Length: 176
Length: 195
Image (cartoon, rainbow over all chains, first blue to last red; front, side, top):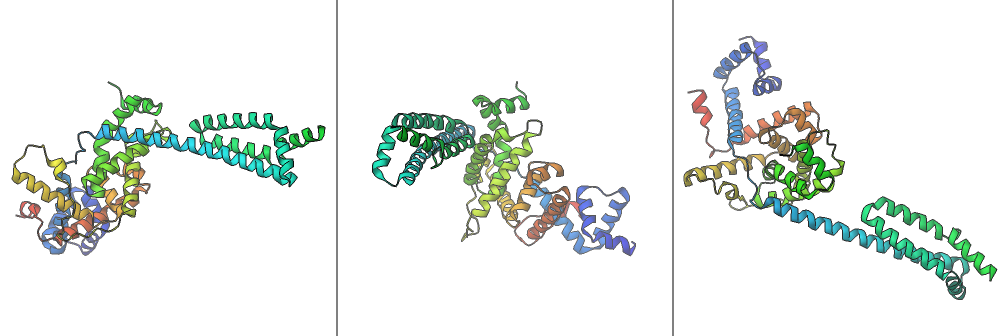
């Protein structure tokens, strides 16, 4: 057998082709001859075939009988958990917005009395806004989290010291 | 009977019956991958259920024009690899470990000898598979037991086809070496081929 061919047979590429069954008829004959002559290759090849046989003969593991039912129960539990988290996130967001609003108003007047009077003056407006905001947030939280975040961001902008609500509150106080 | 594509579309629309059908359709390959990768029946069941929950939760991201099986197996294989990464090494004093193989051998109405042989064979496979890296184990599992093509394995694992080929070859050689180093393993090939 030519020396070059033996070198080729000792390379990974040859083995890959042999395992894939991609050798030509002549190559297969040469390979079988080589395996009879080369003990190291023969032992490696036998071990590879043995792995193939062991793995292909192994039966497919079968899932437990109630697998589908158990999976569906778990899916439902996961959905409930996600719904719960969305509602909690909505409520937390409303509370955060409320706190930010209070802080923002306080930052304008630096005076608790004025803050209270401002809140009283604008109470209907603030209450309506907050109620709408709460309802919208909870509704949105049930469907899309990104929209919920967008709404929260918009509300924050509205209630910042220079936001629309603060300006409106100042105008109302001035009018009084 | 519904075709697979229509079941997937209905499941994407949230139809509970179709979701159940989808789980029933794919429970065997998903469970098998989990079992081969994780090694125990209990963990395989838990991981397979989690894989379905994950897949169904993000089913809206699946493109129905593509085959579902590689997508589902990708979710499964990624989940198993995550679990293996998180798993702490387990040392067994008797070398047997937790096998749980009875769970799927039971009920096949075979003789106790055959059952024992199958159990031993299963232990050998598990021992061999655990000599491989997580990625190689996934590739070998998909190749031998899920009968996926190189292209499909590449899609599942996110590797290139040439990387799959070379990984698979290296893994097979490593398995062969591990097999050679285990004196208890039987070798029927030797007698058959070179007698």
